[in-house]
Length: 236
Image (cartoon, rainbow, N blue to C red; front, side, top):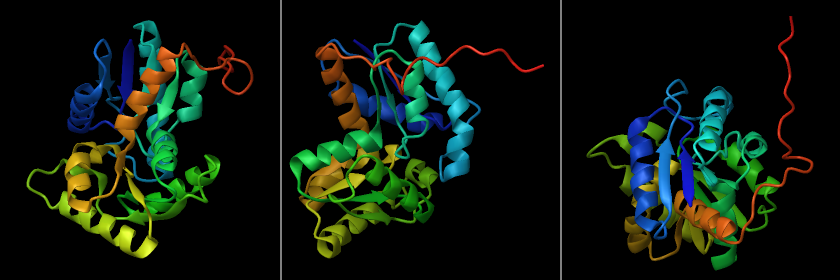
């Protein structure tokens, strides 16, 4: 099977990191393709960045359909453009927030999310409600790290995130923590060892869930909400 991961922002170093982590855990026989639009914002931090990223994201999904991809992962924790991607794709399309929250609910009775900037908190809180996870989600926490700080060599990003996870366990009494940014994917193993709780990376979970859905022969329903978009001519 061929799974395409689309990082909706335009930071290629993040895309490469996501690809390496996904390849390390993909099942034998699974081909991982990771791409990003070239004209999207460098990072997605808020509603405007997300809206600007959607056209390039949809173009990458359409390319995937032409290239024979079987399933997709949208590697932004805001689940940017997820519903629109499902209209365009035939195979399953998973967002990393939705995948991670469902996984957390299967291995714990409660979880908190540690994300980047505080402006992302209300977006993730709304997603928890959308996915029916508000009862399980104890709190969405901001580490106050810009997304691109996760790409800096020699920075203290992982220590900042670790300390926020430990605060979440202590103050929120959560049993698991979800990493609220695709750029944190390479920190998962270290953070799990440091904090001694399940630390959940949505990229990893989404890849494995797409494999499972494809293995079960499932595709995106084209009846109703995710029906293929109607072709329309441009207005004169």
